[in-house]
Image 1 (tube, rainbow, N blue to C red):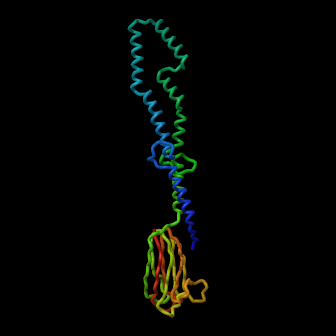
Image 2 (image 1 turned 90 degrees about the vertical axis):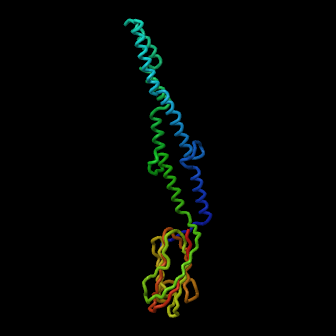
Image 3 (image 1 turned 120 degrees about the vertical axis):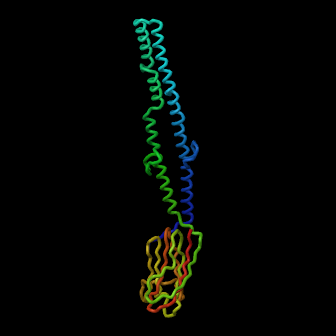
Amino acid sequence: MPEIFIAKEDTSQEIKTTANTINTKVGTNTDVAGTTTLFARLKQIYDYCVGTIYSYLTTNMSSTRMSKVDNLDTTVSSRQANWGATTTHSGRIDTTISSRQASWGGTTTHRDRIDATISSRAAQTTANTINTNVGSNSDTSSATGSVHGKLKDVKAAINTLAAKLPIQPTKMKIVDTKATISSSSSYITAVDITGRGVLTRISLCSASSSVVTNAYHGLRVTVDGEVSTWSGGSSSAGNKARSFSNDTNVSHYILNIYFKSTLKVEYRNVHTNSTEFHIAVDYAIE
């Protein structure tokens, strides 16, 4: 049977307190932008990227503004033809514009200048870095990956801690049954349950004085799929079941075995005589 360790109450409380502290600092995806939780800080970064940078781009590079630039170019061209500018005049204008343009950056169009200004304030590489570091909700759990991956890693760690918290059973149960069992019988099921809890005690006795309890009562307990067997036999067999009682007709097994998923208790008659057996099982579940 595997060893089962029971955490002390103060250790359990410390684990719970730590888990609650981590959960509070992480927050939830519904937190408003701010600095109180990790999710709030991410929301603050997201709002800045979408609300400030994206707004600036859509305002300064909208189709309406570009249309105005095109109209301006068309108007200038039509005015030049209407007032009869000669090739020489137009050449001097082009030369003057080119010289002025070179002095403030040498870009070709208004759109180029806007692109250059935006790039200097928020380079695309910076935006890409932010996007990579934040990641997406589909990212796998990782202690060194994106923010989403790290959040999943934190969640997994919290779930692991929660699974190790001591079981707190609150619903006490008692199974009390009896049956006449033939000699050297197969195991009979007394308890077979699914859930989390603790097995505290098993009492087993026979109605026949010829069937010595300490030597001929067979028990088998299966906890979370692992079998622990107490098998009755002759009183001289050192590896057979023994009770914690001085009463030779009743065996009391004080166990305190915790189970996380399943519990099964079975008993049988190992003696050559057929007799009536009485079994009581005490346990508690969540």
